[in-house]
Each structure stands twice: as structure tokens, then as C-alpha cells.
Length: 374
Figure 1 (cartoon, rainbow, N blue to C red):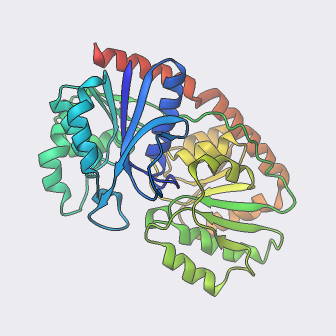
Figure 2: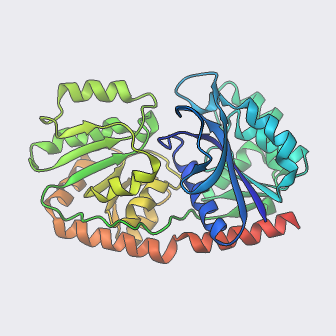
Figure 3: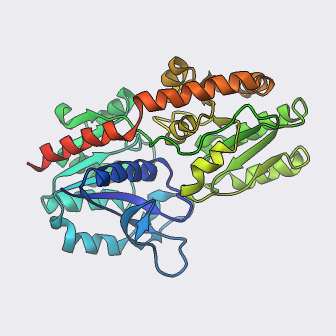
């Protein structure tokens, strides 16, 4: 089959995060199965010509335009829309990783008008919104696009409830549950090292709560003089606040924000650490947590994280409440116990190998594509 995926943005640092990594993982495995795949997106941050391949996947990238800084919602790519008009009908199926933005939403609607079978995957990004523009946008674009989709892929029942709140008329049989998965990491962490590093690897935006990580690190640094605490990720609004907090106290350089790493180096950076912490609220299914577990890194997530039940049952990490005190307490115990870090890391890697590898998910997708294209 000829399969098209659409995501909002590709840049050298993989700033879009989960939706881009999900698409790349899916397409990589579908390509192994013999399908003809292509990823299209807006692009920025490249010097000269944008690449034709990203993480081993064929891509066609178009210059991004931003109506507002610091938000993917204002990104558009007029060249991509023009290209779809000409080439969209050449694909058997289009899989759009859709949000309320000016790339994926108009792309999905255009492909439907071109009568290309569309599969939507919303990654928890289409739910009731208090934003002023959401109401007219949903009436004009979001709801018609949801109703015209052949299938809508959701991760959790919470995401399904959000979709139905946005559009109660979306057919119940159009929604299908699909887990995210990751390839098994070729690099393996050694979390029981004598000089542990606690890692935050995510966008520095308010919902990810990087300041909660910094506060915990500042409280723990004096108790664990051999430990380091590292923030890795692009600034999406919280960078200046993080800088100010680190100027006040960075534990003599042991608490650092080092900026982004290229997407292809994410696993390598995780494997250099001892604990992965994601303090963000209401994460439906964070890819970074699965990736960390695949390296054998113990993880710490919040109790409303979509992966919290898997972290608990697998023994691959710890689930904590939202306040900094509980996070500090859990990290304090983990930093005191190399044995616990090693045991949890091994358990997490075993869980990913048994329940979250990409081959099963790609087989499910391949069957679904065949059904909607027939």
C-alpha cells in the first residue's frame, strides 16, 4: 500500500515530541513490512535544503509559517496544502496525527474532500477547549473532519470521552483503541552507577512542569552530593523561568538545562542517566516514558499519567502525586538505592519487550489501512 502520514512539524530537534515519534515508529515498521510510506509536514530550523529523510523515513517537508510564537497551533504550511491538491489522490490511505493547528486539520479535511480514506490519530489533543478560537474552528473544521474519518485512533477512554465531548455525532464504531509502542532500544542504561543523573527530557512548557523538577532537584542536591539533575528540551514558554531559578541555585552546576538534543540521540541521552522523571499533568500516553523504559531506565510519573497503571504493574518505576514533596521523597529513595534503580529499570525494559513493541502495532495498523482502503 501507498501510505501517507501528516504531522504538524519536523525540525532538527524533534520539538513536536510524541506525535512525531509515534508517526516515525509506525512508518519505520510499516516500511519493513513492504509498504510504500511518506511523511509530510511543515519544517523549520534547517540550514539550506530540508532533508528528504528523517529517522530513516522518507519525508517531504514544506516551509513553516508561524502566526504566533511558542505554539504549534499557529503553524501553517501553504506549500504542503498545494502539494496535497496535486498528489493527495496518489495514496491509498492517509493517516493524520491531528491537532487544532493550521497544518494537520486543513490537510485532513482536504484529503477527505479528495476522497482519500483518512485515519485520524489525535494523541489527546482534540478535547473540549476554553480557547476563544476553538469554538468556531471546531464548528467549521474539527467536527466535520472527525465525522468524515474512516477511523479515529485513541489511546485511552479519557481521550475517547474528550473526542465525543467535542463532537457527540462522531460514530462510535469509527473510534478504535490503539496503543503506542517503541522499538527496543539498542542502547541499555546502567542506572545503578555511583554518580547518578536524574533526567527531565521534554519540552519546557507549563504543562510539563519543569519548575517542579528544578525545585525537587534543589531540595535533593545537598542530600546527594554525587548526583546531577539535567533538563533536556526546547523552550516552549518556561525557559526564562527555569533560567531564573537556576541562577538562584544550581547546586554549583549540578542542576543544568542543556537545551535540546537531536531526536536520533534521545535514547543515547536517556541511557546515560539513572532515573527519568516526567512531572507533567494529564499526559495521555507519553512516548518518552516508554522510550526510557525501553533503555532500562526507571521512570517517575504523575498519578494521572496514562502510563501510570503500566508503570505500577510492571514495577518499572514509581507513580507519585502532584506536589513536590512526594516527588522529592521518591527520588530521595531512588538515589539512595542503586539496587532499586537497577531492578526497576530491568522490569521496565521487560515490560516494553512484552507489551509495547512496534511489530504488533504495525500489524494492527496494516490491517486497519487495508479495511478502510477497500
